[in-house]
Image (cartoon, rainbow, N blue to C red; front, side, top):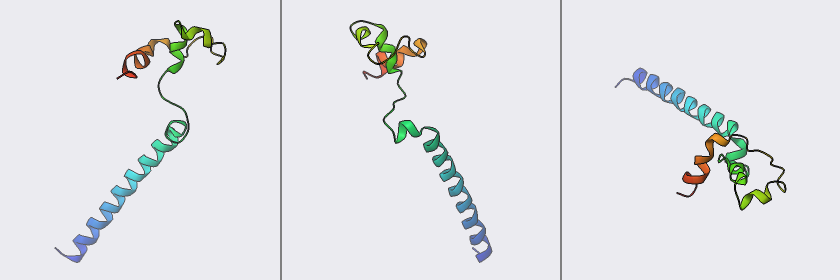
Length: 80
C-alpha cells in the first residue's frame, strides 16, 4: 500500500467518524430532556384517565392526555 493510498483512507475514516459524531451530537441535542434530563418518552399522562390514577390528574394539572391513541406504549410495553 502506498503512502498516498493510506492518507486518502485515513481522511475517509476521519470524515466518516466526523459524520457519525455529528449525528450522535444532534440526537443528544434533539432528545436533551430525555437523555440528560428527567423526562421520559412514555406517554405517562395517559394513565391518569383511568381509575385509580384519575384522582391524581388534577394534582398534576392534567385534564386530558396529550395523545390518547398511544396508550399502548404505557399500558403494555412499559410493563415489559
